[in-house]
Image 1 (cartoon, rainbow, N blue to C red):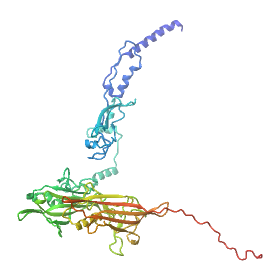
Image 2 (cartoon, helix red, strand yellow):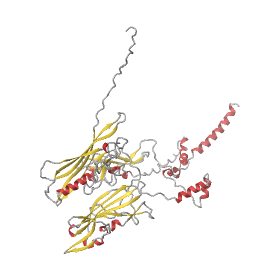
Image 3 (cartoon, rainbow, N blue to C red):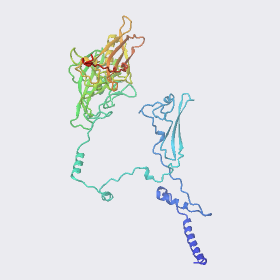
Image 4 (cartoon, one colour):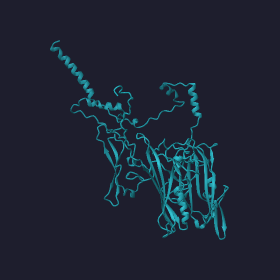
Length: 589
């Protein structure tokens, strides 16, 4: 084909290209709904690929669209708030902190709190301290933070991705449709049997730490003070939470017989559920172990029979008194490792109340004792392991073995400190002596003016030493009780001041445990070699002013490493100890 035949063919191809490009340059409609799907987003980008001739109107640009809604309010988010209902130090975003707390902060531990860092624009909470103000104040700012990354999330173009899709639950209407979409399933006799067994078997219920103790009708109520020193009776007792509190109660002496919180039946009648939720054949009654009666002159009398006593209003001359009023309540609950309550005991102190002792002060204690269903564990084999309790006991008579309590954490204990710092409130609450851990505890003892020195000495000694202070300590963690000669005696030393003719009141108990490394250098074992308990006394304080005297009582435990440095030794050089036969040089000699 010559050049003359090519001209008409080129003209025809040129017309076809013009018609196609005219259709391409035609503006496409853009909808706002298309921004919510990935397919529509791809459609709106196609016209930008073709060149736009001059004079053609510019296609509408899609708007920025809705920005992602922040899931978390950064102003309410605080990552350093670790203690509930208490102000954390240097945590400027803690809602429990007041302006007085902020004034003593040194810096903000978390100066900025942000949400999702993948968003292009997000809220940021900035915390700082203004030390120029008097007192220093906290400064809070809520600003918009811009993410400079080019891969940040700018618009929400697929809203279902921001939420979890709720699965469709099968019913009689959509069951056939779900069967068509699924691959199907089959049931056999074993699966049916196992499924039926799982439905018939109830979940094993048990108490967990902090769970309220349930009774047959409600919860075991444990009165305690809340915002003030007044008693609140609706406080439930919690599992494994030992408590020792005291509170005051304002009563009308004329109505003492009608107040339930003053009666013995109020604390002894509830029946505790063995496990939460199960009521049938699972109720543990509260057994009254002892009842003490306190008279108006503070004398105590223990009753032989634990009969139910009701408070009674009587008249003694022109004075009205109320007898058999509950002054102290002590619960002792026994539990198993499976989270079941097996026994519940109660000790009561009843007294006589007159108009002179109103408002009335009451004390409440609750202790949990684990029932030993497993063998007693060792504190080492043979040497002690750091963090395990000391093995201790006492010898009732000469020649007998060592007697130990079954509670391995109660064989050697010291006074335990509490937030109240009241010695009378922590009496009976002890903490075990753990090997390798130096400890220090203390409390404040308030002595009334009428108390004598001899009575105070007896009270403080019982407080420092506890009920069963040990006489012997095991040298190793696996020492046997019958090997008495191997046990280390506790040397008890009393240190008093040099003032004569003065009553000495014990104020401190210092326990020093010396131990050494025993055995091979490659695997040394910790062995206790000496235990000394020093009871330090000071003169009985005299009353300067007021009706009470405050004495500080303290206890300290110190572990001292008495190991001698190992000496390097070498064996002696070998020597030849051989004798020649008597005829070795025959016949020359």
